[in-house]
Every structure is written in C-alpha cells, then in structure tokens.
Image 1: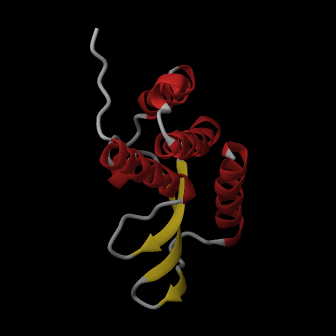
Image 2 (image 1 turned 90 degrees about the vertical axis):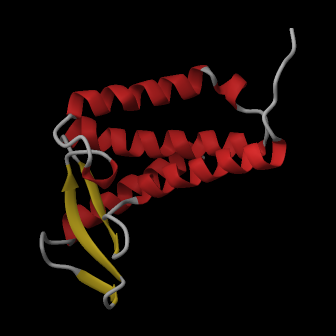
Image 3 (image 1 turned 120 degrees about the vertical axis):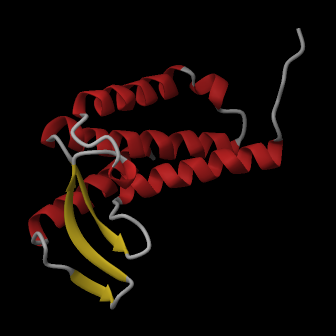
Length: 143
C-alpha cells in the first residue's frame, strides 16, 4: 500500500511539473480551488526555508523510526493505517527533497497553503493516530 501511495504522490507531482506553468493557475472552482505549481524549499506553511539537510534528516528519522518501531507503534487498525500514511507521505516528500532540493506542491485550496498528496497522507496519518487515541485510549503497562 505504501508503494501505491508514493506512486500516486510522485505521478501527480510529475504531472504538475510537466503540465503546469509557474504563476499560471488552472482554475477548478473559481476563487476556491486551483492548481498552482510551487517549489517549496521549506516545510509546512513555508517554515524552515532552505533547511534541506535538516528536513532530509527529520524525514530519514521518521521513515527509519517508523519502520524500526512499527511493532510498538501498531496497536490497532488506526495506528496501522496511520503509520502507512505517515511513511508514504514522508517518503513522497523525501524523494522530492533528496533529488530536486525542493518539494513540488500544486493543490491550492485558497484557505490553505499550496500542498500535494504526500501532505494529504501525513494529515490522514495524524487523523488516524488521533482516532486511535480516542477509540483505544492510551495503553499503559504496569511493571
């Protein structure tokens, strides 16, 4: 499933990069939803601009930490899917950052910064982890 999600992210970014032109929006819903090509050299909401090495390091920690601790993290279907979406999002944006030096963003819903599918996957992951806490509660062990 991770491969499919990363493929979706990378293929839509490729389409955006090859079909969209900087500063020329493609309107889907006027004043609400457009496609706009953006090269994001930072993280969410434009923070940490030009901190490529730091952002690549954080991405690597998330990916390898998620894989290494997967047996500890996965306690339910919510946490299972949360980890899958988190890894897919981190890998998708990590590929861009590693090979391009920036992340390709192109989905512009006017009340949010421009984003991509990897960002959506990370948001879904956060939602899954929150649902896991709500549904399953915090599990503690007594030694």
